[in-house]
Length: 246
Ligand code: NAP
Image (cartoon, rainbow, N blue to C red; front, side):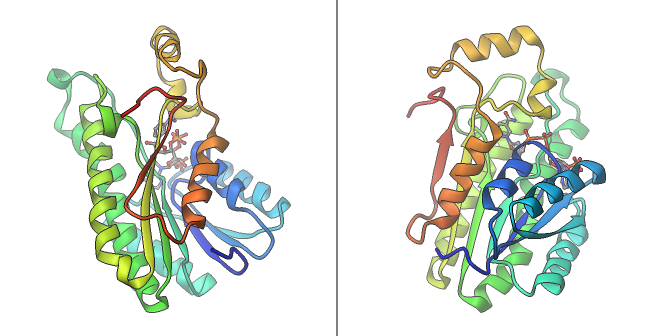
């Protein structure tokens, strides 16, 4: 894919992996729409970084777990930039606890953001992509959705759902030159993983064949690779230092 003139929408781009994806895509002649939910100050930092790399950009506040807000987000980006070539469904949350202690609310919050949010944004953006007969969609899943993770029944189910969604939509949209892929990160150092206890973190690192956590930019590079390809669709690229091997 030629990146010149492309418009990219990244959900959850105020920090962590979303910010790193934005930085990896930031080139001259690329416009990046940065979505965030609550942290405008951090979102502004992402914007400064991508502008410093020569990209055009703008911030879009929206809670993607709300259908109307996700639709308004896509409409606002189309109004501002005229098109969406690349959509990265990255916004995600965790509400970890063991199954027997998991409340309905903890289950639903994770589903609503991680799975429903990707559905709402993809459905809205796909209309414009179909008209343009071009689109690249990358969903940020997790190895929890591939292998499962104790204490994350909600998150593992949402991410496994996202992988199934990726394959179904890839089949539906292939004839319109729209590819749909997923990246499944392992343990990556961000605010999300800083909530883990030190002991659990150290134990997990010991099981990573490459012996360390991933860096957010290593996920960004994988997303850029999948968005750049014209001939990869319906795939999940695991980026986890070898933690899960199938
Ligand atoms: P993070 O540091 O906690 O950042 C989460 C981002 O998502 C923030 O920008 C946040 O916006 C945004 N967000 C959350 N709920 C949202 C909503 N309802 N609407 C719009 N934006 C929302 O997390 P991260 O580690 O970068 O994770 C990014 C993605 O990678 C997630 O999908 C996560 O599941 C996945 N992942 C992460 C890891 C890891 O080890 N870190 C591993 C596998 C997969 P605000 O700042 O405005 O709240």
